[in-house]
Image (cartoon, rainbow, N blue to C red):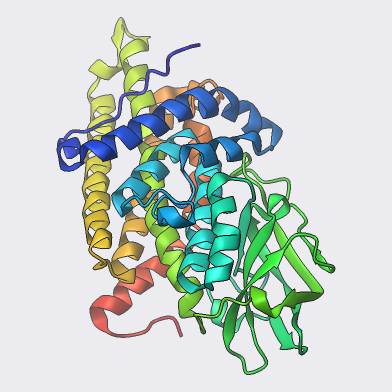
Length: 392
C-alpha cells in the first residue's frame, strides 16, 4: 500500500494545546482516512457515487455521535475530539464528512437532546454503529435561508400525524433509514418528527448531475400523506430553535472539516512546489510561490486557533451561535481561498484527479452555501454586534 505523504501544518504548535487523547483519536482517524478513503475517493467522485461501505467502518471507529454518552452508543468524547474527527474526514473528502456530520449533529444530536428515552434507546445505538443511516429534513425547495416559512405540515389524526411536504438538498436522502423532519403543526408551531423508511407515501429521490459533492448522496424527502406514529414526535422541543440548535452543532463540525480540506490542499501544493522544476530550480524558490504558500499557511494557522478556542468554549457550554457562525464563515472561505491558490501552484496538474485539490475546491463551493450561506453568517455576526436585525 502506498503511504500517504500528508504532513499536517502546525506553525504555531497547536498540537501542544491538545491532550494525548485528542492526538490518539486524530491518529486513528487519519490512518483510517489514508487506508480506506484516499484510495477510493477519486474514483467515487468521478463516478458520482457515495462509497456506502464506509458507513459501517465509520460506525466501528466511533465516528458517529462521538460526544453522545456511552450509554446510548456514543463515545462520550469532548467537542474538540469531534472537531478533530471532522477535520480528518474532510481531509479525505467533504462528502464523507458531510455524511458523518448529518448522522452525528443533525440526527443523533436532536434525538438525544429533544427525544424521549424510548427514542434514544431505539435509534441512537444503531446510528452510532452505522447500522442505520439518518437524514435531516429542514431546507425546502422555496425555503433555504428562511426556514421559518417552511410549508411542510403535520396534522393530528388521532393515533398518528399526517405529514405532507417536500424537503430539498438533503444529504444521505436516498440511503437514509430514518429522517429527522421539521414541519409545522396546525397551530403553525415547528415540530420535529422521526420518519422511517418504508412508511407509505415517503420517498427520497436522489439529485444527480452535481459538479460538487459528487461522492455524497444528495436528494429530496417527499411526504405524501405519510402516517407518522405519535411516538415518533420529538417531545422536548417546539419552534425553530430546535433545528437551529442542530445546525449550530453541525456548523461547528463543518468549520473544523473545512480546515482539514485546506490543510490537504496546502500540503499538496507545498510538496509539489518543491518537486516541480522550472527555469532550472524548484518553483518553491520563486517569490510568488513563496508568497502564496506563506499566505495560505497564515490563514490555516489562524483558522486552527479559532477552531481550537471555540472547541474549548463548547466544552464549557459557553460558545454562542454567533461565534459558531463566525467560525463556519471564516474557515470555509479560508479553505476555498487556499484551494484556489493551491490549484494555481499546481498549474494544469491541479485540475486532475492525481491531486485532491480540484475535488476539494468543487466540494467547498457547496460547503460555503449549506448550513447557512456565507452572507447569512455575516448577517448573524452583524446582528450580534449591532443588535439590529438585517434579515427582514
